[in-house]
Amino acid sequence: MSQQRHEHDWYVEPPECVEKLIEVEKFFGYSILDPCCGKGTIPAVFLDEGYLNVECHDLVDRNIERISLQKRFKQQDFLKSSKDKKWDTIVTNPPFKDAVPIIEEALKVTNYKVCALLRLAFLESEKRTAFFKKSPLARIWVMKDRVTMYSGDYQGKKKFSGTQVYAWFVFEHGWHGPTQIERV
Image (tube, rainbow, N blue to C red; front, side, top):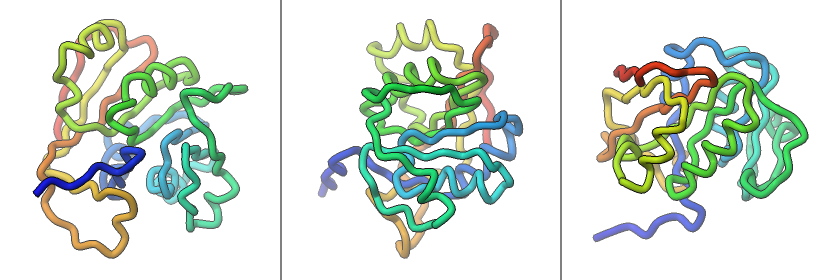
C-alpha cells in the first residue's frame, strides 16, 4: 500500500540529522536561514547550539511552538519573494520536487554556503546533470543510518529505521575541487 505524498512535500527531519551537520561542518557564519522550516526543527537545533542570528521562513505557517522561533518566522514563498538581504548560510530540508530551484535561489542570497538535506537519490537523474556541472557542490555527508522522515509533524511517533538514505549536500561559494563524500 503506497502512502499519499503530503500536499507541500513536507517531511520532518529528526533533530539528530541537524546535530550531525553542525558537528561535521562547524562553520556557518553569523546569519542562518531555513527557508523551508516547517515547524522549525533546523532553526531550533541551531539556537540550541548557540547560534543567535537564525531566521525561519516557510510557504505555510505550521504554528511553530517554540516561542523564541515564532518572532523569527516569516510566512513567504522563498522562490517568489524578494530578498532584501543576504545570509551567511542557508540550511534546509527542501521539498524534493523543488530542491534544485531552492538551492539555486539560496546560492544567490548566501555569503558562504547552502546545506540541503535530501535523499541520496538526488544525485540521480539526467535532468540534474546541468545543475551539478555548474553548482559548487563541495561535500556530501551521507547518513550512516537510514532516517525516517514522517510526513508533517512526527511528534509522538515511534522512530523506525528508515527506508531511504539521506545526505547533507553542501554547496560552498568558491569551491572548485572535486566533491568530497563522507559518512556521518
